[in-house]
Structure formats: C-alpha cells, structure tokens
Image (tube, rainbow, N blue to C red; front, side, top):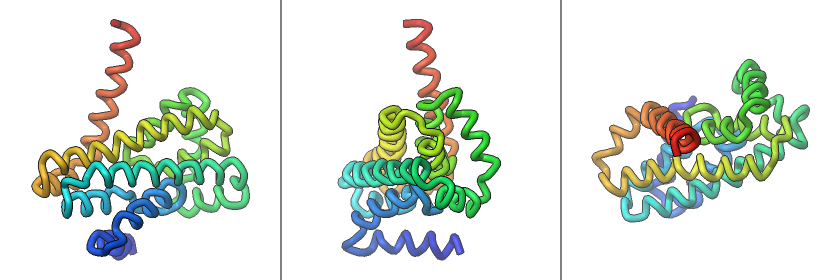
Length: 193
C-alpha cells in the first residue's frame, strides 16, 4: 500500500499541479499523512533545479501550516481525534516518550523532530496536547522544517539530478549528521563564545 501511495505522490511531479500538491502533501504530512513531502520535493526539484528553492519554500510553508493544524488537533481534539491518529500509526509508546521530551526540552524536541525522520505529526499533535508554548512551537517548527527542506532543495540546486540517488539513499544519515552539527554549534556558542 505504501509503495502505491509513494508512486501516487510522485505522479504529481508530472502534472501542472505539482506545486499545489507539494504544499498540500507537506501540510497533511505534518498532521496525519504517512509519506514525507521530501519525495515530491525531490522529484519537482530534479525536474526544474532552478526552482528548487521555490519548492523548498512551498514545502516549508505547507509543513508549518500543517504543523499548526496538528497542534490544534492535540490542543482541542486529543481525546477524539489525536489518540486515533497516534493509535493508527502504532505510536502509543512514542507518545509517552515524547511527553518526557517536552517536559525536559520543549523547543529542542520540536526542532529535532522537524529535521529528522522521526514522525513529525506525532510531535505536532503532542505539542498541542501538552500545551507547550505556541510561539516556541512555531519558531522551532519554522526553523527546523525550513532547514530540512532547504537542505534538500539546496543540494539539488547545486548538484542537479545526479544528487537524487545520494539523497534518497543517505537522507536519514545526512539529517542526523546535520542535527548533531547543529547541536554542537549551539554548545560551542554557549560554552566557548
């Protein structure tokens, strides 16, 4: 089923509605849809590398608005809707772990989830359910989601279609390395500057 869904998402890159589909996919993925928008972002950017930053911006905007919708689901509808989404993905154990992360790290938890392959929708819904500060949530989401999508768009802009297989093969590793470097940068700034 996921394979068919994957190909369905990719087919939008071949239509004139690809940019709108990217926005909607990014929106939906941030609150309830299983496939990340990176798939369509890569396909669109490969087709038109000069527009890869535009596509990254569209993807970031859709993801940020979708994250706000996920926050709303958690804030207002956790019992009736949020729990069902979390159960559907079998992420109940993750929910309790994320609760602990929010209590300890709130903005860091959202930021890291926004960058990494961790299901971002769980973090958007639980951010609302745990009532973390909305402005903190919004800023952490905007920075992390934009960094993720502009990283992909930038790589394709710089290296063109030949980078596609590299990104698809090593995306998770690239993101983890980026997060580690980001955290190290903050630690260096805090303790040494």
